[in-house]
Image (cartoon, rainbow, N blue to C red; front, top):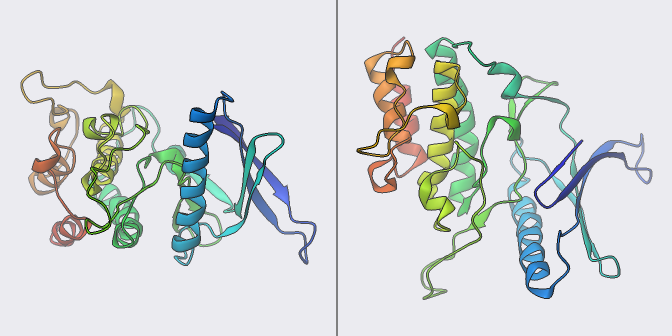
Length: 259
């Protein structure tokens, strides 16, 4: 189905279950075999399995079916529910601007899943169009690929700062994430950039950047109302303290829009 980063993703049939239902197998094959690199790979994979086990109860997040490590080959395998559908990349063609009412609805759909994820103290860290599937069965969106997730440790459990591996996708990931300090607002930034892409028809990494503030300059490239424009600007601020700090706050403002 695809490859990149840490491994390969396969579409498979579960021969042990009635009807031989399709499933997704993620094979993590670390690029290096030294112990330090393997430890990082193992941590990322263990985290994804733990997170999927916890979050899979949500109807728009894939269920974890199995997880195991081949110690001889130093490979990791994760088996999860297959979601039939197409990524929303197909809904965001280059040079085509979507109406803001459609964009606002798309953001609401993504943010409602993200609200559940953040309530479980998880940062996704790689929200982008190719990781959002429009499910064929009911037209709802499903958020996939939790390989970059970061679970926030409660402060009473650790006194150490939560520094993590820098993971993300160019254009959708904010600067603090690349510095290894993702926050909940890092995911909000990614969702906002999807909205900006939908309104401008331009992929995020090709948008101009303000040399004074570091913010993305996009308003003059889109036909957008003042109210919705302000919401998106507050989602994609360069400095994370200036952004929305919670998904609930974004959803509240989106509900106030009148198109």
